[in-house]
Length: 424
Image: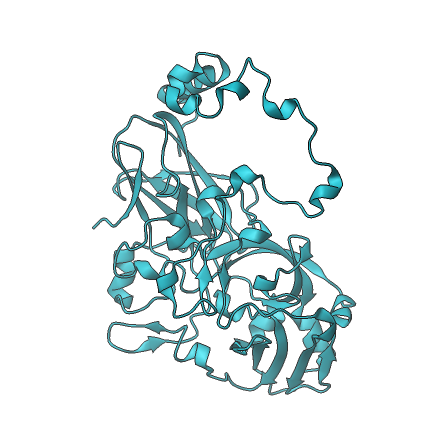
């Protein structure tokens, strides 16, 4: 771990703080950046916004970010998928901090576009190997006991373009198919108990109300353990792109099982082997075989800043920031390498450390403008250690596009710009 009493780091911190606090800070921080903006709004002048009244409360009935943060948005890569309706957008991880993703920035993945559903007309049906089939309205669901849980959701294809080598130049595009929010909903086991399970029940099939009727098989054991039928995220009702009015939450497991716009749960005695678990969401190996039902998202981490979309702008004291997560439990430790994996130092984990949730880490350094090969490596409380891409490829090959949790490398150039690279 970085020693907080290290003389070099202390000196770097003192130099930064002294420069930032005084009028001499422009020279220390770099005159072009320190003096950016309209000089008429800089001290000792009185800025424009201090001279006029602002909007009243009724003008902004639903809050929005500042117009100066308009670049912090989800982005897509149009050539990744065949159509706009069956596509994905990416969370801007490089522009966020903490562990909770704002609702408007959670990545999207759709198979037939966003279903716009009137909650008054929506029903959740539970049938199959049950004693009492149910048809539940949204008001019925809200009458059940509810819980709040914070979990990450990661698409199985997150980082999938990196299997064959460094492809997309940006943390948002390589790792942005993940987000973390607080879900409010009903434990799925309560609904299944209400329906009554037959003795031969072993699997569920969850189906969405979108035009693709997206569906996946789910083991009954997982459903009874920790799954939720959720209707709120971060306090407010689900966004349409996140499955409004109700979705399945399957903590720690690949995102395609978290069926959105949930309309039907069928209870059976074996998996259904649907399109989305045969032709897709299987891990193709180098010999042509495919691993099936690789539900769990293994421990993973990524440095979010500095990255290609968030370069270093100043020499001296700098904070490396990143995220780690595991579908098997809590993050126990994160290590940082500045030299492509030859040497490792422990990062500082800060904030909440929750079961199957994003975890924030930081690492402080005094950057003198030298080349860096930044990597992070996560370990969870089961002892699982995030592997290198080379280790993954020894077993998996490069044919798959799913479950790539290999260590990511960012090359920091002397200019502060950052590139997506691989090291051998």
